[in-house]
Image (cartoon, rainbow, N blue to C red):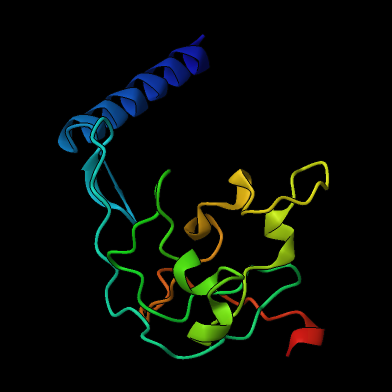
Length: 149
């Protein structure tokens, strides 16, 4: 009986400590995002120290989308306009000395070739990302695939 009471008392003390800890932080979570309330959507910070026009970058793993080696701040990419295609579309790439969009971006899921970019590949920055000179937020021991070194 004594052990049962002791276990109940320890559980109550632990619950009280956890409750005080939650109250002390006022429902906030400290993370890589900072000290932001859980019910608040924080605006994304601007990319610090963006890489500027450094040329084609090596890929780190098979099927990695090419990285964007230049600034894209202010590029309009919405349902009506895609600024990326002004340089990388097949019509303009040679004149702009830019890599062409892959032919796979002109195919539907069923493999049918379209005359324009497939809607599922239209929003370039979902896969192709600009780089920054920022230090990693966490330790990383990743090494590229052997064949890509």
